[in-house]
Image (tube, rainbow, N blue to C red):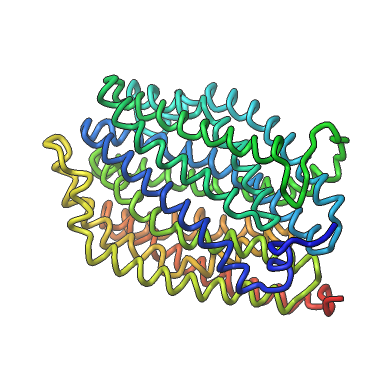
Amino acid sequence: MEKTEEIDLIVNHPKKAINKLALPIIISNLFMMLNNIIDGIWVSGLGPDALAAVGFVTPLFLAMVGFANGMGAGSNSLIARYIGAEDYHNAGNSAIHSIMLSIIVTVIATIFMLIILKPLLLIMGAGEIIDLTMTYGSIVLGGIFSIFLPAMMAAIFRSQGEIRRASYPLLFTAVINMILDPIFIYYFNLGVGGAAVATVLSGTLPMFLMIYWMFYKRDSFLEVKMSEYKRDFGIYKDILVVGIPASLEQFILSFVSILMNYWLTLLSGTVAVAAYTATWRLVAMGMAPLIGIGMAALTVGGAAYGARNLNNFKTAMNYGVKLGLISSVIICAFLFVFAEPLSYIFSYSADAAVLSARVIDCLHILCFFIVLMPFGIVAGNLFQAMGKGTISLALTFLRAFILEVLFAGLFAFAFNLADIGIYIGMVVGMSIGCIFNYIYINYYLNKHEDYFTPKR
């Protein structure tokens, strides 16, 4: 097979490749995060209970998104490594296996989540608003098919440099949801259930566009023909070696978020959960550029690792961190300075007016959560690029489950700082963990330098 311009860029020009790959991902992620904020704005008009209901379900929904993206990371990593090694047959075969895997996982995950949803929400502390929470959660989690297949197809497109096809459907999803939200929430008077219906529909429509590109138009570098599927458990294993740990990383993050919601409920009630939910939507939007840079580094790093090119791998790592730090400092400053006007978008109704002061206090602290995040995101993605998903998982466990929880509990309970202590602890834990991640990946590369040989 003759290399396309996109493949040549990924294999031979890491800085240019990261720039080209990251920008569309960042734009689509920004629209998705903006969509989350607008979703929160419409829901907040229903009052703090409705916003808190969404807040209780959000960690579970994000766990499913993370599960889908984790499987996608496994596929992206494997295909990129095969492309870097110029083994295009196995690259295409891996793409076919990725689609089959996403279908199997979708069915299992949907059934499982619907069975455990209500007991889990009660454990999380949503008892006072369980009806609202179940209304939203059963629809959103029943429609996770609109997450899994698009995430896997996006990973396949991204691994071969077709970044527009990987990213634009996310943008379309966000725009469609922005249009459907007020229609289903207020015009059809479905409340939080309407927000859930809009979420599922907005993910389903662009999914069909991706299906058309991949299975009918077939003009990509890798041709995906399901008729040529021949089961190879070795390929499934290689995808899951990265995919399962990457998915578990999001489960860890979601568990930590659930724990924070529970602690906030104990300390300050559902109003604190609503304020945290609103603030986190703003902080998550600030993470979008960092996530985009990390995903670009995964593709470029995977190709460099497959080609055994240490120079390109380190270039992807250091350039990704540099771009991320520039972005995170600017975003942090913006969120801190404009915390007050930003808080008003979640407190425009009389029912939600109580949120404004809490959101300002929360945002003034949590804006620092993202400052050192590039060190952690890039390091984690590059471990996935090398097929070392368990190392990335261990580092995420240390950072989120150990450090963030430890410091949040310390500041909130031992120092009696209540909800403010939780926010401070999250920032401290994240910062220490991300710096450690970057130190460790440099140590790992130095220790395993013999793997890399000059590119042939």
